[in-house]
Image (cartoon, rainbow, N blue to C red; front, side, top):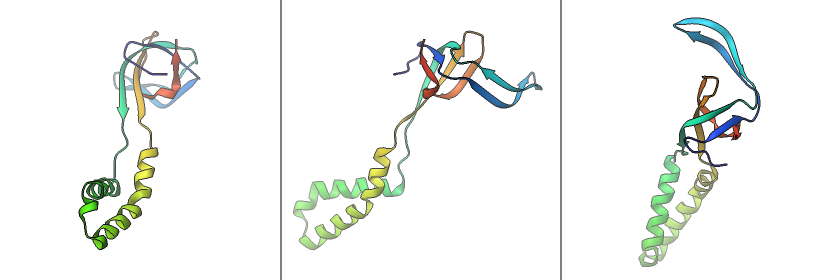
Length: 125
């Protein structure tokens, strides 16, 4: 399901938020529970893209160099570059397998607002 601002959603399962719940600076409850099926509207959608590490950036740089100029390089230099690219390939593959994480801010019909919630918590209403 693709989540967009303004979309009506409902909780797919019961949700319990542990820790102190405060109002006007005072602790008013120990935890808050929202039942599955609680409906609301998405106010904001945030995509969190995986960060590339130094190995991934180096792989991209060297792979681009190899693809663009490898055919012009002396054989020894090209082989050395190919070996370096191969040694960094596992980091590149691991980075590619990471998926974009989506979180949402939902204003429930009962007035509660849940921010930074994973998209898997919701289904369309």
